[in-house]
View (tube, one colour):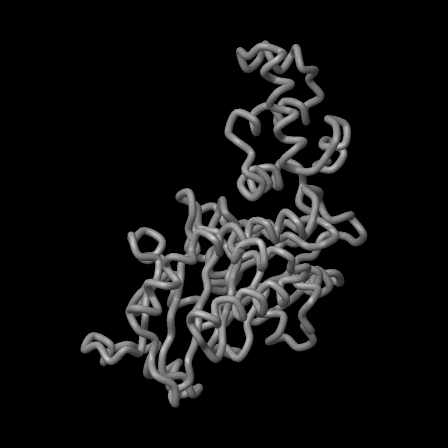
Length: 334
């Protein structure tokens, strides 16, 4: 019932609100932050928050999470048997917690419960619940309740993405956008379409100021600074998928990052689509060959399969992605 009731959201803000309301029936809270992640690269692909950390503080928590500088970093929770961590319970080790004393308390919060949304060995997102200082802190019982909800929460995220859009690139209505971000994560320069593309990544949000736009760039820029080959996120929208790529800028100031935003190409999109839609490794291999224009018999020879098996794999992909035939699938991905 929990999964079915919360799989109907049509926008990212609606998804966050519905999840918060459902969880709130068993674990009351005053604010939340929900983040979806690219299941292949781990970079963020959407975020929803209500009465959560704001502005620069929100950015700082994102940076500290990846660096694992405080208690219960998501990088540890995703590997731990327990996917839930509670901060603000009064434990002795919290005395040195920067997040508690420099982030939560100054903003009026006294306790945080964070959850790594992991299922099948894949990180689908994270969710953070907050309680104000006047409320009792989250308890170990609260953590246990949320831990039991993790499989449902992951299912909801996947259903939301697969209901939100079909596996197609966003139509190329404008030239790709290029944005240069400095070490302080502020936009230093952008092509004429750069800011429009950032807004397209989160169409439900009112991204009017430079600080607002930085909500889209902070995460991918940080990943790019700490990856040898840059960073990549594929962002689902109601109109199609957007590809966001980032890498260090040669010849620029230290930590400058260049971000390119454009419709996700078939090659870029396919790994993420396979993950979100539950396409198997063998099914994915068949799709790759189909995108090259090979017939079922040619695919069968190349992959050492029977033509019957190839057609079975294609039919399974049609069912999972909601298309009716090979031509429709190729047209969508192309």
